[in-house]
Length: 129
Image (cartoon, rainbow, N blue to C red; front, side, top):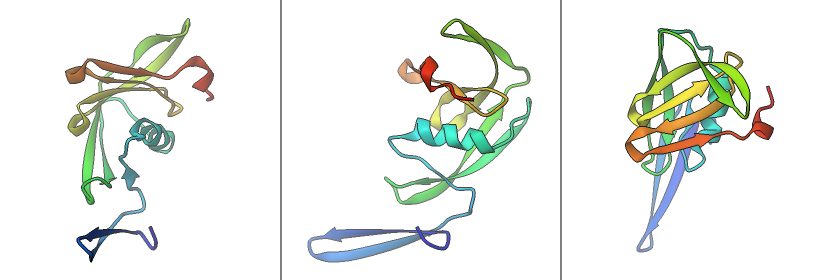
């Protein structure tokens, strides 16, 4: 990426194809390491109950940009992580079909994907804030 433009090259049967994608400075990368990128995003993105945030994202698998709408629920919840209680924002990430649990300091604690019956929980040693 250079000057807010991501470039991709594909070679199909000896023919090279290049695609350039213009990005805004706030663009978040969605990859196989999405949880780590989401954690970084929440670290810098201010959350307020009842609001919706729109985050520009780059999906490198499809070489396309889009927007991820995240609805922050009206009230915070308390969750238990390794015996410690955290007050968290509960964020519904629509197109990802995920629910994110985020501390007021921006630490992503848990990701749920109900349609796949998957929950990703950060371990206690990973909670650094």
